[in-house]
Length: 205
Image (cartoon, rainbow, N blue to C red):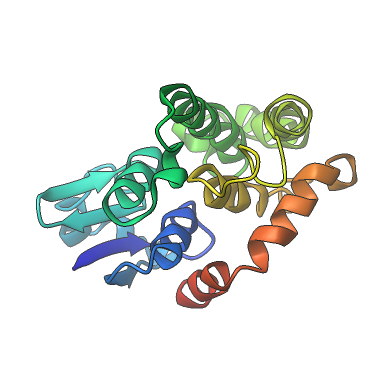
């Protein structure tokens, strides 16, 4: 049985949603970031990065959301989760999730995790002030150029969908004007209605 380490309101939600979608047998261990449980020695031994998610498998430990989503899909789910038999669609899915990880999530982190980049109080405030603009720019690219609809890659639900849903659940807190993102809002509502999403949200309350 898999064991996933997660935290409320974190990107780990995407992986828990997918575990529910594929009906995997798993245990969720919920960390309390307000108590810095991710920095305790017991968790550092599992993931020295001190972040979530981390997944304990029979073969070892996996970290980083794109890798975990791919592992869950390939182990438990249908081929459509990762692009079916199309090498090109598979690559496009990795392209999309890489953009979420390397650009969109990083832009969001400037609001709450600015100390990763600077200790200067004025620089930290500047990072926070930039977040509404940088996040809107990042997700507008998704809205205008990357999102196909009704799901990210078109008609099939893929590993991109719980990931986009999770990151876009942060937009209001980031001060983004979501009225300019009708496609993403419709996608959010569509994913929210799915039983797997509701089950995952209940797990991470």
